[in-house]
Image (tube, rainbow, N blue to C red; front, side, top):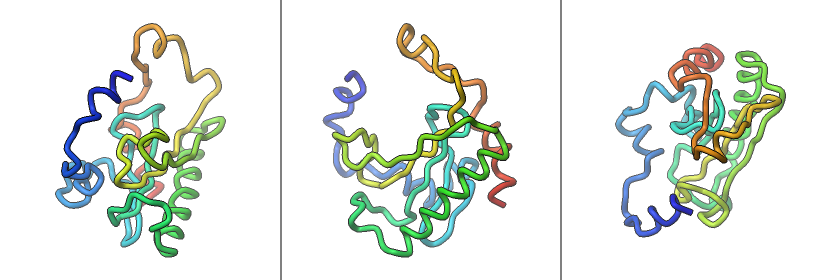
Length: 152
């Protein structure tokens, strides 16, 4: 609730962080793959090491507005993400999903993004409950280094 309350009055015209990645290359070291319809990037604030996002290249916030070509590219990238993560990190499972709309949990509802979160048995602990923090055994830059060859 602290996060929700802190961000509820943000201006609607703020720039899209996902579009900014593509436009100015500010987070180029996080982009693993891209084409004219979709792209894959490492999450800036991962739930687990190797947490990936798959997004349409076009700024679109409603799933009903995704074109057939975008949908196909997104589905293909989701499969590639799972294959790359399996090979690079050997997770025991995955959470794959889209939060559609702010009330459904989308932190940035104006630009659709699918999460691909690798999971391991015992990957959660008491830290999020007790200390309101997550402990990740791998930096985003290290995840990029491990995964980038699978998208080259």
